[in-house]
Image (cartoon, rainbow, N blue to C red):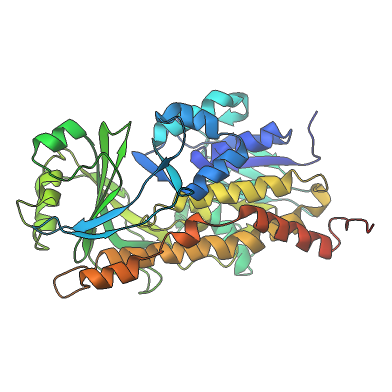
Length: 449
């Protein structure tokens, strides 16, 4: 028997969507998840989970399953080192970490397999591309999801976990604009608050044995490394116990983040295979020497892919349409630049707050709008702060040398940049949201002794 008198539909079966479905189903909430792809699987390679993301997964009850797929028995310390991308592998800054700053590197597919392995997949559906939402009449609560195959599904609450290209986001944006019209997703292609960042990312997975054979001197198996330069930087981090090096090489042609205006969304596809020569020439044009570790590393990428990085811009002023029962989590709410490695962690924080509020003993179908507003009141400022910080960090890493920042200036700019992300108290957020609901007499006040 369901523990609540409302139903939930999650659009998007990625990392955040499946974790959200697991947490709700475990609490007895009637939930179903709908994935557009023919199978559950993440596009991409490795992902680095920060300490806040690890704590969120622990709170959601999935950390042990994720660890079992990560080749680590426990979270690990992952100090970040910044080095010159030019000829000399000069250390710019060795970011200090404390014992509490333990994170986790994992392949995205391994993460999904971990969640699938502990979930009741009968509630999960593939080949279900949501194209629209039909809002209910006042006499019938909830909304109806319409799918491209002609089917539909009705639920009291719709959670948009459908990523940066979110279909669900447009309904929240329309509500913010005061529009009650149903957008035509087929003709508009969901361009609401979506912009090209001006940055392209070349991605690849490299066996460490190949990297060593190429003459790369710096040991990339120990910790994440950032090779910095002007308008370019490379991030590496080890996965699979250091056997594989995840490489992401960023090149910025113009600034399109929140500090410098937005750029129009690019035509699809955003991910394209490219010749290795394009990658090498892009970085050598920035003065990166042919004998540098950075260029030797890029020469190992035989089949790189170029990703056009998009972001939610301008940031949303709300992640919910409370009256119509819609909430956004993850990239659908705050798709951000990856320069703090914090995007998926913010999604997990969304899921913690939302699921704990939805499963609160006093939450029911009649007060769902108030509960969604409480979720929004703590998550929107927090995640948007991280979104802004991610853009700022990218600007710092791409202002090194060649008339940019000196080593000392870089250290000053980079010092403490992960502190606000890693050292956040979700318990305090949830307590604040519940207190607001009590103050507004949505939840009962505690009896005085």
